[in-house]
Image (cartoon, rainbow, N blue to C red):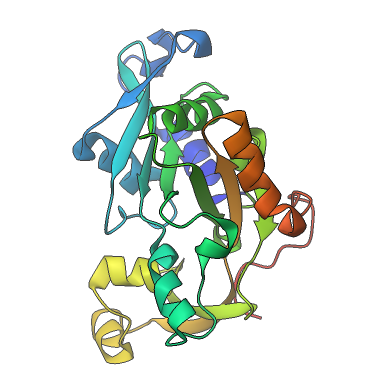
Length: 259
């Protein structure tokens, strides 16, 4: 199964022509000349909505960056809160069972989630990896732990995170499956659905999307990368060393959603 973004890029490459043909051929797309810099929401949103699987921006965004070729934006990433980080105190108090407590790894208060990212079809093949690595360098120093998740329903195995040297820990949920909602051929999790319509109440979802189907889907799989000095990165890496797994490969039998 191809990743959703690859399918979109292939389609756009065949459709995105004007009277002069493939207009992007005149752009200097040398990866060594590409510039990564902070961008505004409008620039980020334009590419995310067109190329990204969820088709929407996150509910909360802290930092956004783009990679530019000859003045043209060829890809974007955005970072925001790792929402489960807020549950740590509640978990420790005993009020929440089965939630994440990142303090046990020394991550609490130091995390940021790479929540969305996409490159346009004409960008250099290494645009994504340069964008992620350089944008991580530009993040505020307080973020020592960068995490990202992949959704196998979108054909994502995390190839870009593997190329960037992230650590793969797989699905961290004790429950192997979670609820998903299939809407117009696209699968949404609870967080993305709340971002889209504000809640996960069945009556509200059904009223807006009469053909919606509720399905069971695999829990998302997680990657980690660390920032800071060598001692800091070594300490954080050691904290999850027992969880690190071999990278998944696309030729493995990866199911998409309902089982």
